[in-house]
Amino acid sequence: MSMLKRQSERSYYLLQLVFISLFITGLFIISSFISLETLMFDQLPLMNPDTLFAKSTHTAIEETPLITSLIKPMGPVNDYLVAHYQVEDIPEDHARTVVQKVKTTSTQKRASIFLYTTHNRESFLPELGHSQPNLAFSDTSNIQSLLPFFEEALENDGFQLYTDTTDIQSVLKAENLTYQKSYDVSRRSLEQILKQVPDLAFSFDLHRDSNRRAVTTTEIDGTSHAKFLFVIGKDHQDYHKNEAFANQLSDALNSHYPGLSRGVKLLGGSGRNGIYNQDVSPTSILIEVGGVDNSLAECRASLEKLAKTLNGLLD
Image 1: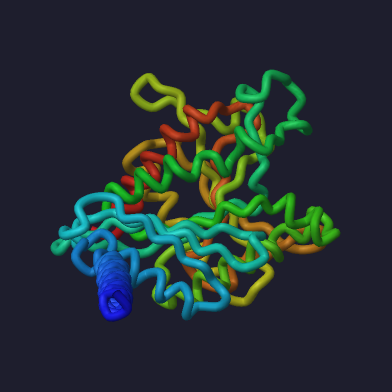
Image 2: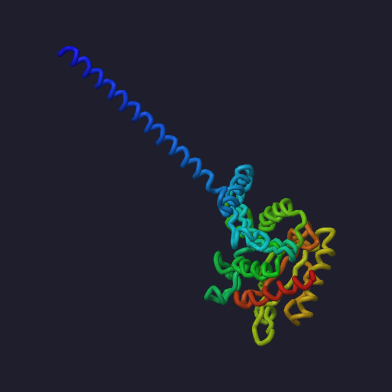
């Protein structure tokens, strides 16, 4: 009996060892499977062209401490040459948003354009529901709200667009600056773009004029349009170059659409900015789009024709 008992105990312990070995082996297999799944998951982006593009972009972001770039593909990823991209460059202080929209093809590539609005809250009475010109300001229905339409009109011709959508008035308030410092604030984004895009072709600062409807409106093919006025600051030594470009654009507009441009106005001297950030480039100009009595629809109709005219200048 004693011998049988010892044999039974040995069998019991042996069986326990077998179960323990099987348990450890099972854990090892499961652990390996989990690691393999994790590895495969990590590699999935490499097998997906959409995710591959996003992953490589994310790496670039981490290597850029000052600017976060959010790149969103718009169109087939495998057709990069004909795809649209929207790039938002947001400095760390979140005071400014610069949006780049690029449309290129393998056979067509236009110049780069920077759009911004120094007095971004300048608005239009028909959009506000009151008739007081000195109160024609809004944080929504304003000159800046026209930028997406103008971008699209220019983008359709293959231009590369860089757009600053800063709410300048919020920055002035946050930094305790006066309204007269608006151009100093908008200049920051302009200088930033010039560093990123040294071959920038044009920079346009869009404004709304304070003149009334009789001065700022014309009719083209039975449709009301907001007139343009090109303003050049003469308080920098090379202003005549900006003036020459503005005259060229104004003349081209009126040759295609008589009366759409009110011409070029030189401003400077005491009490005025007199530079309007135009000293950075001979093709940097301030464009007054309509006046306080014009509607956004009238402004859009005119901006579409300005885009076509600018396209024609480069042909």
